[in-house]
Image (cartoon, rainbow over all chains, first blue to last red; front, side, top):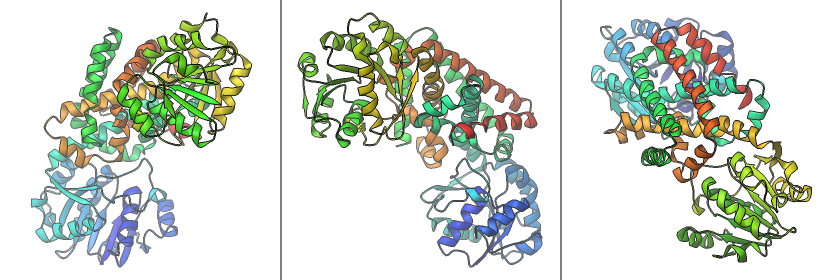
Length: 282
Length: 282
């Protein structure tokens, strides 16, 4: 099968590597508007060819993967659906679903589109961030599967299960709510933690570098993530993100108050409660 | 040289493994008040013998390492200093220094004591958490070195450089300030993030587990850490921790306000600023 990938960054590029590695694509076609990325994707062999024209890129594809930032997604996905036939399947790999599914809800080719979110990533971006095995053992969320042709869903599942990924079904609203908890808030707090440390240590960067152990690196690494990726995600999922952020601020204020009051028994009880996360993240 | 390690948890146990691996200890003696830990440390071969009596454990040692939680440290370190001669050296490996150094400031054996903090750890605790290579390539902070005998400092440096670790000097006040930024606040935000998600997903733990990608795991993993380790650290370094926490709350409120106002250009500017952490944590 010929597969066309629109957007050759971290996710699009890593999918290209994974699909090739598992023999799932005979031919990989790329679309990438940012010219340095397009050149680099060819140099790295992520795709076999790059087409500047969307129609020419989509026409030969059995599957079209749209892997652009969430703001561009809202305009690119309908353009792609305008171009496909009933024999072709289209997926997005976006991090938010509610607005996107509303945009294409009445599109005549809606049933050829399957909304998926591979729950994997790193803090890096662009074709050089593409890594083999990024999706291995991770979860693929298929959203509102009943709105897609069963044959299209079956094709998409078969491909992603071969990577191999686990497949899970969620409604778009549930997806957006849960990803706010397990992904979006982690990024927001990491950005804020980086700003905190940068603000407090303006003249001591080398000292932070020397002192920073693994704990610091793991909590701030997400703050290296691209604003061009994350601002559109926060924007599309604004209400859920604000809701979780308010809960997080409440929890931080509670810990702060226990420390202010020197209530160390109370603080111990809270941290013991937080330890319950061990059952969830083994 | 015979080395005695008081407290055979993550840090004490990992030091035992490292010292043995590099041939730096002929004989390793342990002291561990928690009997299941004492038994386990012997089973794992962390130490050659365990002494219940502090005097018997300290007497044959060229170097005594005190690796107990920060609350116990304030009483155990003076007890150990009461027992040593001018031929023995004592170190702590605690995460805060100000209060501890004040407690032993006028001790007659103060100059045989070298205050160090190996900047390494994991979220696990107890003898089973001991890992080979934990300190390799990490930084050892030596605090207020001028208050210790140069020969004692030289011995300690030689041992830790052999692991191998980099050695850095800081005043105790600076140490406590900087570790609040690069370690203590990361733990506090991680505990709060775990509480946030647990609060919001009371009935959906399996769902979080399925959805959680690497970003979530890396930001909440510190929330698995032992309250018995961390409450005493937050207590000893309370003023610095509250200071950094207030800055962090301010940064989170700033990001929240930009999202509330839908000021996405402003949000982009802030996240680009946060990206400067790339220069510090490569």
